[in-house]
Length: 275
Image 1 (cartoon, helix red, strand yellow):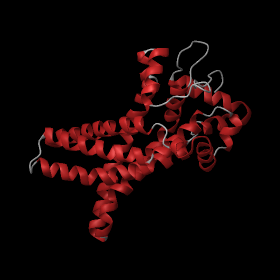
Image 2 (cartoon, one colour; image 1 turned 135 degrees about the vertical axis):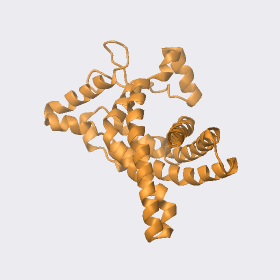
Image 3 (cartoon, one colour; image 1 turned 60 degrees about the vertical axis):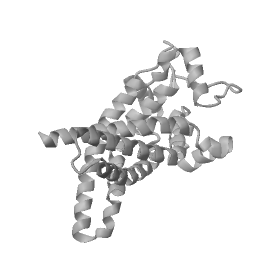
Image 4 (cartoon, one colour; image 1 turned 90 degrees about the vertical axis):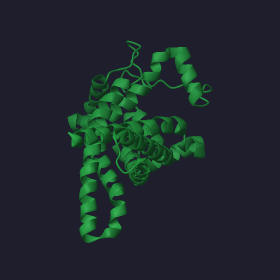
């Protein structure tokens, strides 16, 4: 990105794990830098959840209704299909914000020594790539990595909801025949954590590919990158272990965040249905 070089550790100073990363960030940049890109994360999380969960609910209800009327053997697959379609819609709509979040967390503005804002990152991307290729080229770059993100998020959602729905039903049944708000909260939080952590571990290689593509700043390389080529580069440099770089932090983030989002959403639905 023009004027915003990547902040990567020099050769010979590679990170040795999650806690090594945290220790170095705190020592070299301060404790608050652990929350780098928080505004971009919030900017993407709010619209994504606002699109994703209501779409999932509507699609799942329609698919369950269709399967009950036409083919009962399709009913167990309703969460998988609904989650995949709803996530695809949310990813495509919010992809520019995901690009901004990824670059904000990996780069710093040398003029100020601070992280660029969401709008500054998007303007810089648009200006940089739109010079030679025109405005359409600059807009197209806003969706850099959307294929890799779909390849990561759609399987994540398919796995997550396929696990979450039966886990949630089991937890609610175990909690009692007449669940109150506490039981709804607890059952959805536990089921969400379990499903989110499992899905995050399974799709970690796809997350690594997506991140590699979005932090690439060479315009020529960006336009020629494919999922297969990026996967080959990661395998060449890091092997099997490279594909699971950051799997610990990814599970540590995805498990509780899935539990929190799903439980909060279901509690809101529970309250609204009771009033």
